[in-house]
Every structure is written in structure tokens, then in C-alpha cells.
Length: 418
Image (cartoon, rainbow, N blue to C red; front, side):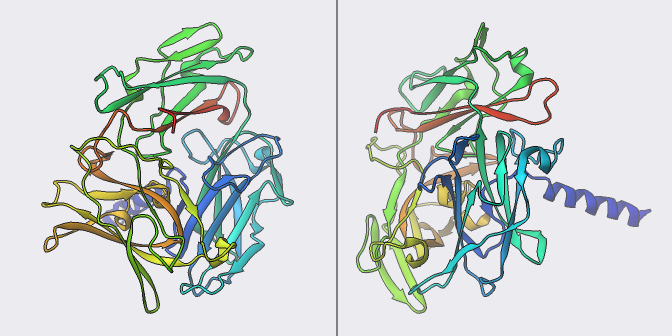
């Protein structure tokens, strides 16, 4: 009986570990610099229009002795919450073939860290997409289809509605202090939404941060042809601060906010200028890119294969350690909060430290503290109502009888002009 109970427990734990919502993230430590965008334009939101002629571009690097092993990929349709859609089959969402080779790859050239760069566009000659919604690409080795190396997520929209949105620092909990409040209206003339509370799934994100994503949003008012979302406390966000920035596009000279760079065999090591806590200070505007990453190298026009990897050292000065964990955050962390991105406190130098291998480019980042499952800028970056933030609203639709969540609307707005 004890053995049976233990087996059931192990199976339950295994199921829990495997039952996770998809996110763009490396699963193998070999995988680096995963980028997913529209039409190959760095920094764009990975959303394309159904049948609109656009494409999703996925790229990544593999730093491994097995770099030349052939990789394959498969496409998975997901629901509004990024779980695999189990109520439809591949033939319902896919035209062509799944389980294909990634044929576009090349080794790095003249870099201290050797890697193989991979590119994948969807749709392509092997597959096309039939329906809107969320999609995940799983990448794996040719001979190990059950061992996924990375997942890359994107969305396909069939625009059936329009969304009008505003952002205000006059919130339902404070006025021009530390928060911003999002309000928006979904206009759905011509689309018969019988019960928006059950047929719609509405999400809101600030700077594409998944940790502060707002889901299952309900309309404040339901009017003919439109749904109004306002005075909703679920749409109040910490205002935060402008992202910190650094640039490592050259190994010949120090880029923006780089203290120094040196070659320590077998690779380059770069020190970011020591950061200071910005909470409790005056707000200062800086034109950031809201967490994005742009890969570039001043020594080459072919940054995909000729940009190098630097060991990048971050330092955050703090007289005493905080009573909660500190993490670094930006698109380059894929909005994940594993130990890989947790800062370590140095008692001797009174600083938090973290080292990461990062490809040359322009990076945005910030420091967040963790309290349970919530992350905050309050203790490290501060919260200033003047901060320029980017908000995105996603609207998914599943009417009665439909077996999947379709994406029917998306809207992005800045809290203030850059």
C-alpha cells in the first residue's frame, strides 16, 4: 500500500511539473538569446494578422558541443491562458506538416564564445496557420522529440473588434503618486457577444511583464455594441520607473553605462556601472525601450553570427540586504524569476551581484523584489506616476460551440509620449 501511495505521489508531482502554461523561455541551458518578433523587426510584439501576409520570426543561439545536431520544431495551439488546446487537433489549426527541421542555421564567426545561430519563420513552405489564437513553437533535437530545448510563443489575430484605451495617474487609490490606472472600451458592433463574462477572456499587461499580468477582467458596464472597463482596481499598476540601460555593441570601447571591459581568457568580461537604488529619489525621464533587447555589433553588419557573448556583471549598491529576494528583469530574462536571475548579496562590498552571459547589444533592465508570488519596483526602482509605460490589452473570444480561444482584438498604448 505504501508503495502504491508513493507511486501516486510521484505521478502527481510529475503531472504538476509538466502541466505549466507555455512561455517564451529556454529549457536547456544551451539555449540563449531567444527572440520572437513580427516580420524580423527586433522589438516588435510577436503578433501577426491571420492571412495578412506577415510572418513570425524566431531566432536563438545554441552554445553547446552538440551545436551541429539537427533541430526540429512543432507548432502547438494554446488557449487564452497559454495552456495547450486539447479540444482541437493539428488538422484544425495547421495547414501542412508539423515536426519539421530548422534548416536555417550557421556557426558563429570570429567570436570568443562559439555558438550556432538558428532562424525560423512561420508561416513557411512546410506549414501555414488556419485559425487565430496563441501558438507555441517547441524546439527539440532530431532524435529526442520528448526533450524540449526551448519554447517560443506568439499570437495570431483575426481582428473582429476595436479597442480604445487610456492611462491615467489619477487612480482609484491615489492621485499623481505611485500608480497608473488603465481604462479601455471594447467596441464589438457586428459581433454578437451574448455573454461577455463567459465568452470573452481579457488580459492587460504592463511592458509585457508576465508577473503583473491582469487576467479574467470583467467589464464595468455592458452597453449595446461596447464593453467598458473602467474604475477597475485590477487595472491599477505600480507606476515603476524608466528602465535602466546599457550597451555592449563594441569590445573596443566602453558603451553606455559600461564601467570597463576586458579580455579574460577565454572570453570578454564586462562590468556594468554600479547601480544605485532609485526609490525615494526624484523622478528623471530617460527614453528607454520598456524592457526590450536589440542585438547589435558595431564591428559587423552580421550581428546574428558575429556578435560575441560577454560575461556581464551587474552590481546594485545596498548598505544592508533587503528582507526579500532581489531579481533582475527585462526581456532578456524572458520575464522568468529562476535562481539564474536572482541577485546575491556581498556582505563585504555591500552590494548585490549577478553575472550573466549576454550577447552584444542594447539592453533594458530593472531590479524587482519578490514577496511571495508578487514582484515590485517599490524598494529598488521606486514608483513614479510620470513614468512612461506601455500597456497592451488582449481580447480572446470563445462563443458557445467553438472549441478554441480566438484572438479578436489587441491594443497597445503608452502612458505618455516618449
